Length: 278
Picture (cartoon, rainbow, N blue to C red):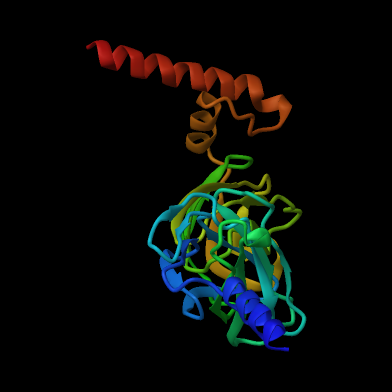
């Protein structure tokens, strides 16, 4: 019996992580964690996915470096309805994926994560830490300029869309315009977590008139995550807009008028050439 107790105690000690052993978290936040410590990762939207990334390198009980000491990283406890995929073996860095269900309520959640040394080959055991995230649809900021555009029929009006991703997900965003007749064009863009990126989104119509529409950016994985800007658009059928657009190679007018507009464009280009020479 005494021998059995000694063997069990030795196994437990061998399985426990050494006090000097740590894990270096490299995404979405940077931190050095020891056994049973915790980290707050940031905000994530309902329906979004994010990665917890860590270096496989650490130290042993004597403080000696252990290269590729961790073989994988995995979740051993998740909130109800959540999903995860452990890192592939021997990744560098190790990347564990976590997916939040689309019906997750706003609030703070905890994930129990473990870094694994397979078969305790490096004699460092396994390490457990606790990752906290805040679930909220408020995971990005949107800026759109200008708020008003004047164009000719069929002439693109460029909108400049800036997405400041304050969350921890790298899931794509969808840019679209709602409220324009017969408009059905969207762009899928990437704005990585903790970055600010700008994109050009052209809008055009062929019918003259005044229009009011919403430029909307939403998460590709959750319609709950979205922001909109109201835009005024005026489409004017006048020669100034048309021949400037023709110089850019954009066909704006009915076929019967194209020879006339082309001639006007040639005259305008000739006038500017002569003026530059004088």
